[in-house]
Structures are given as structure tokens and as C-alpha cells.
Length: 243
Image (cartoon, rainbow, N blue to C red):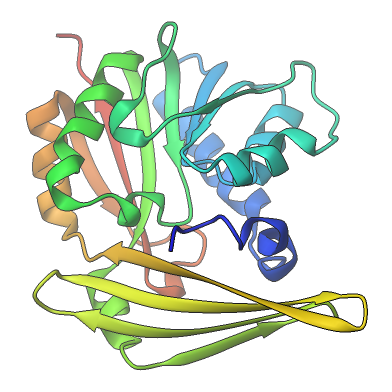
């Protein structure tokens, strides 16, 4: 079962409590602290594009990439006020290929937790290639402690038209949280059942900083005071070097 296929039509409905504006505020504060010019941004693993459109509405030119066709269709269908319509690309993170450089790249809601450890180096190498010299990379992850802590938990999200039931199981051998998801969606008087499997890897923050350094990013540092910091989410910020 692939992730973010059957879930795509219901993703925004089931994640209505995500504070996207707070994520955008966090990024803008980092841009202001850096002092550089930030106009063209990449939203990596953009999903249904809510953050993409939020940033576009604030005046940024946006490129957004995701590997899920279903999620991108949702992103492109959204109507929002923006000076420039975002460019949406169907690309895997480790196959990122842009037409030029961007001033900064962001990746929110633990998008990089979905990247297998052996692919992270290539993801950072490609980001180094497409973020301009002295540009920024900002992303967040769920901490390994958080992922381990929800092992065995069962979660239910529901509205009048959809019920999503998922169970989390932590695989110590793979250092990953695997959760199977059952989705029951209303179809007239009947309900349709579908399913997905998601895998989030428990990346150690210090190891990520070392990979960033090896890829050519400088001053990688960890912040735990960003949005949803009380829910096991931390942010890593790094600057692309000039070489």
C-alpha cells in the first residue's frame, strides 16, 4: 500500500488543526534573522500545498515538490490569492531537479522522516545543488523519542464523512515507525474502506547535522521552540555554503 494515495482526498479535513501560519511565521523569522533576500522558495514534500499557498499569499514565489500525484492534484486545485501561482512538481526528494536555484528550501510536518536513511545523503546533496550560496534550508522532524513513545498506540480521526483509524508500531531493527491506516469514507448510504501503510524513520538530529555538513551546508543547528515543539517536533536550520 502506498502512502498518501487513498488519504489524499481527506488529508486537509483530518489535519485542520495544523498551524500552517505559525510555520510560515517561523520561517520568516529565520529569514529576517539571516538578513539575506528571500523571494523564491522551495516547499519540499509539499503534500496538499497548504503551506505553499500560505507562503505564496505572503508574496513569495513558490516551487513545490512532492512524489504523490494525488496530493499534488489537491494542491493544484486550491484557489488562493497570490501574486504568482506556485509551480508544482511531481518529484521524489532524492530525485529533486529544479530549473535553477532558490533562496531557501523548507520542508514541514516531518516530511524528511519519510526519507530512508540511505537516501538522506542524496536528498541533502540535491538541496545543496539547488539552494543558492548563503541560502537557507529549514526542516522539521519528529524526534526518535517521540516516535518510540507512540509504539502500540491506536488513533482515530473522524468527521461526518470519513473515519481514519491507524495503529503505530515501532520497528527497532529498522529504527522506524510503521503504521497501517484504515480509511472509511461515506459513499451515499454506504461506506467504502481503503488502506495505506506509512513508514517514518527515527532520524537522530545530530546525525542529520553531520550529513548536512558533508553535503556542504554550514552552521546546522537544532531548535526545539518552533511550532508543535511540545509534540516532539524539532527544527533544523542550515546555511548553504559558497563552495
